[in-house]
Image 1 (cartoon, rainbow, N blue to C red):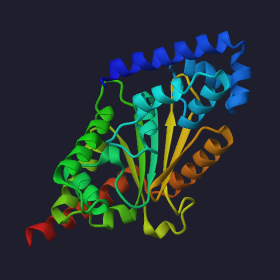
Image 2 (cartoon, rainbow, N blue to C red):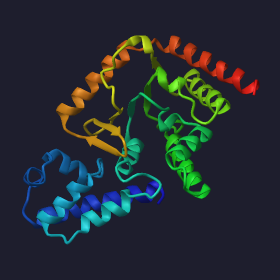
Image 3 (cartoon, rainbow, N blue to C red):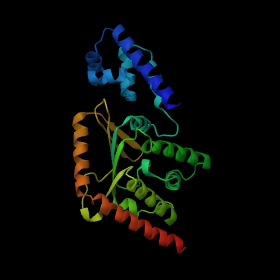
Image 4 (cartoon, helix red, strand yellow):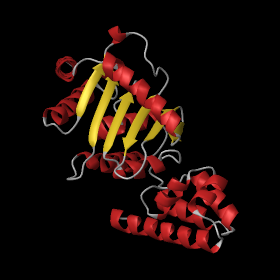
Length: 277
């Protein structure tokens, strides 16, 4: 579904939500309290500024007695076979964000990946799937990354733990190309990248990735990911704690210029290794 058609469908979702809420005699605040979100969030759903999570859509159906209408529509609009169930909503939010900050402890974030790196990651996590499956996943990741070069691109800031540079994904040639790609984006002022070196010691987020997203007309959101699972956080207190952890990581990281120098050095090491084989 094209982005314009998808947005029009979300606007229909919001219009229907408002109509059925008013028919049931609920204010936004009253509906929100019964489905465990704020009245402000209900207003954002109705204006198609923000998309509800699946469990919220299900609770709205139960309360308004809409026979699964909102859950079915959510699944049609957000579910995409190219993305894991727990990540599909994040892809939608990335398209709306005006600012994205990421911490990556193990692999290059998806928005910064090259096709070869994405292909190697996909094959490593899915060793028995078909080539068509792999290419479908790679194409989806490349489609996501286009938000960084759109005219309305978000401000993007990533902190990579040094292990991201040192872990060989694919082969040496794949790694050199991947690191060169990151440097090129940073040198062109498309993204800001820092490296958290091994010498920084213990990390405030030792067990998983973190993505923070800011929006023009909606509260910020945090997304954390672990093994085959993800957690989208809307609660203001949790988002604030996540932002605090990210700020500590960014403060301990190398400066942007020193970070690029380290990435360039690692890329050159991989390049020499590739040329000697």
